[in-house]
Length: 623
Ligand code: AGP
Image 1: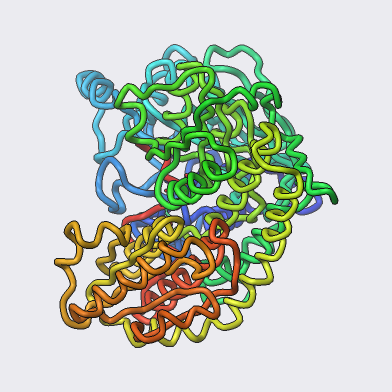
Image 2: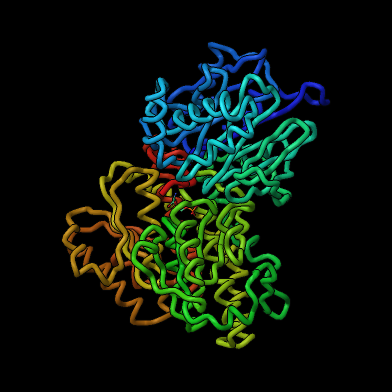
């Protein structure tokens, strides 16, 4: 949720960065994680200097322009998604303690903060904000001056021993210029290694402008950085190791590249996202080689059930996967929202394969569900877009999507890459278990290989649907219908519209229409219908065509996404967008795209910030 960045540099190196520039650049890239407020603290001239402001990063930059900060080599920065306390200047991070000598920033929720606060208040402490973070800062300040006797790392060790919940904490103290101390539990933190400078970030985008050498940190670890050193320990102070990796994307891939928004750019990135996710995962004979999976083929061959765990858009990718994997592998697949899973005593065992799907790899609900399933003995496989993130690191196996950094809060290219990865997994399982002939797998892979060009064709005709979106900017509600794999696509189309255009939108299984939702239809109600291929299961196509007629008969304005050549729908549609022919199970990779373009264009026409919609954050690291 919140974005965190830390920096320890030196003025003696060839390029000497001002800490403030590094922090602001990092926050700019991390702002997608939360934009309720932003703040920085730097250590300079033997003192802490802090600025913080409610609202987006630009507000903080204006504040600093009016009240400049001294040049510094050490600092911490924060962009907030509010949990405890509203999005005000006072609740913005950093929070100060030890008489203003110590500054702290935090991502997560400290569950036992009320008890600690009461204890500190009884000892005479006063608090300026409603946040749990200020309590953690006060605790750290107290321990620093008492039991830790001026050792900031030791003070952090003692403080985290008292804290419950999820947190990444970063602290600087005026006594220690050149030092940033951080701790993480159930919340993301990555270390960046530079030349005479070191960095901390919620993810690698926090320091991608300065280094591509990164270190994945483990659960319950403390890291202390100076310009030339980094020391990792566990919460007890025992030495620990991080896993170094090279960031495989560069800063340019996280730029808008001439598009009006990151979301639009990411929609147009989709041919590459799908192609890159397919790349190198099969040989010329159509044999899948998922060497990166750390679960043995023997173990995978034994599984009797798959449970997909995910939230939001990622869960809709899971719903698409259910149709494909069950069809290809004849293994039952359940799809469950992560936050519902562990509270209902689910039946999983060592023959269950848990497939978690998460773009960020940090979604707390999914992480907790995966941990729960692991405790029950299930095998866990993570489909993830973010190297160095927690969920793949804690899973038995990882299958990375190669969509590149997704910055817009509304997920687009990650969704198509996730679906692609689940197809690869399904085909791999079918290969291992002998459910499909090698030739069939080869044919499906060949069809998948044609998808990027087909997406490009849709994008090239994007204006067809964008012009419709602009005309519909004032509609109060839009419904989406789909059947079979078109059902999760309808749900995803509705979610996109809700989250960036703030329009009431609902997705339904078209077959469910007569069981209630049809009562919503009145004159001119816009209804998108995702129509299956007329070449596929005949009854499915004709049933959806009947559904279009049913809503149209009741006054709906019908907007149809259909396969090229489907003339049956024309008579009943106010608007038809045709996608290229493709096998039914792969259709979501195409039918989703016009719905993404529709939402993006409509929200832009309303003048909204499509990249940073209200109330949301990209990475949901609290439950
Ligand atoms: C998608 O547009 C949303 N922003 C959201 O539903 C997202 O997909 C969900 O929070 C899951 O995130 P994850 O993939 O990073 O786990």
